[in-house]
Image (cartoon, rainbow, N blue to C red; front, side, top):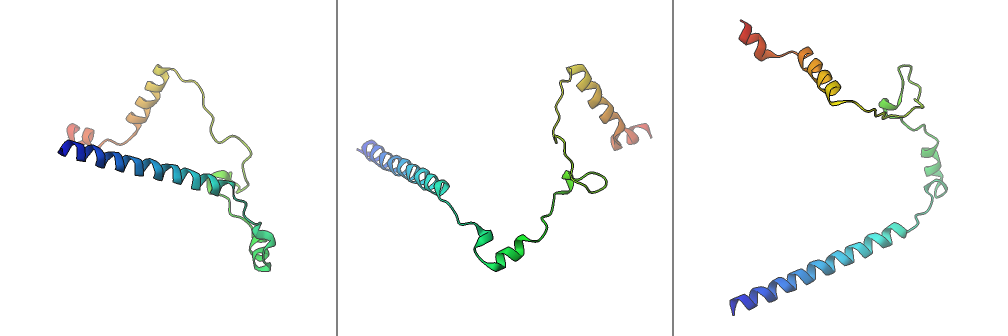
Length: 104
């Protein structure tokens, strides 16, 4: 009898969870289809704020402060041996306090 109660309880919980998931998906779908009014034309105060200059992230600027116009991520193929050599060079160039205590 106790097993039957557990099965019924977990079936009800599972049904509630699935229905909540479906309801959430429908809500998100409707929100993504909603069109919002253009804020620039809504009030004169909004126009005042839009005339201000937008701030650019510092990583998108070159040394002179001008925006860069190049790809931000360039990937190239590196062999395993080249990668190991680069990692070893970085490791050997970094300060290592444990080596200093061993040498003394």
